[in-house]
Length: 416
Ligand code: AMP
Image (tube, rainbow, N blue to C red; front, side, top):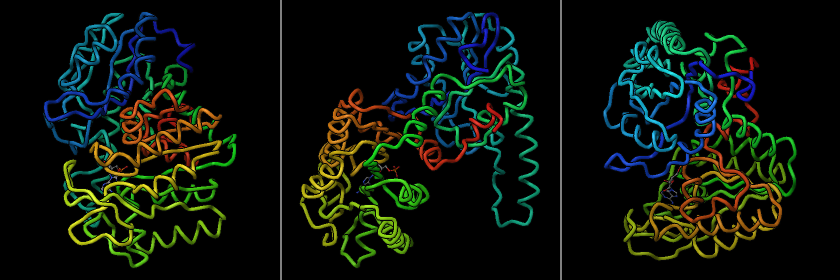
């Protein structure tokens, strides 16, 4: 079924959204991109005369109730975005009565799904090495089905619109779909759009294809980096991973972030790039700070000659030029992860240079896809959101989709 074709009038729809929005210490939303992303689906259902049951996770509460990650904190923001009152269900697994009482046009927001370990379906408090682990996992999977069945019981149809978690086979993103027939489950508008954007990149790669991968660590991105080396013409690697590469070449990196157990992985990436004829673009100089803070003293050093007491926190001026030149002329661009600690205004120049170069290339006709919470925050911070082709709400999900993997959240609806 598609969301356009389904008749929502008089029906209750349970919609999985990704409201895992960043909050500051006062519980205020600092970036509402994800809420705005889900609005078209949610409004469509209300406008068509349906009732909404909204469910999401927030953070990583690890199967326990944690008030700091309560979705109650964003209830008013959701109400404002939908221009409708929102009823809050403080226990997502005990919302039968509230769901039953819902009338067309009404909205029920369920509490954080991950307050229950059943959502993720991973046994808690037991190590994988424990002989009893397999049994515990089996038991948890059975409980996950029951949990999904409870959520399904609230509604007449299921809409999957949480692209950010579509790469997870969780109770609310995939398992729940088993309790609806094909005519009563569908992707939301955001999911449709995201899947289409990935398709645009993969099915019709216009070259040169330049990928920019940044962020803090090599380890969390190595899968996609290796995969991209089979697809792109140029790969820019920036951010914290710069120093794992510098260290692998025997460089001095001071206090910079590094993964000492990934030095061989870094060298492997360089080798694979050479073998595949991909131009690997790494930073050569860094803006360093003498503490991890916005008001740290600054100096620019070669990325392999950072003195003790200093750490690389942003791409240096020479590196920025190198990155900008590499992006110039690109026809397809994928950007995931900042080039430095962009959250600090004094260390965001590298990320800004990349953002501006991506915007410029887009103006010249490139298709630019930006994904991952941090690069999206970057693009927003620099006011470039409307100068790139597509901003994905997914980080890991986007990268897995680009790798060509079928996302469980999509498979659950389309039966692939
Ligand atoms: P990730 O979650 O791996 O995509 O990383 C995003 C984070 O990487 C952001 O919060 C950045 O502040 C951080 N980051 C980028 N460059 C550096 C760096 N040179 N040192 C420490 N953290 C960095």
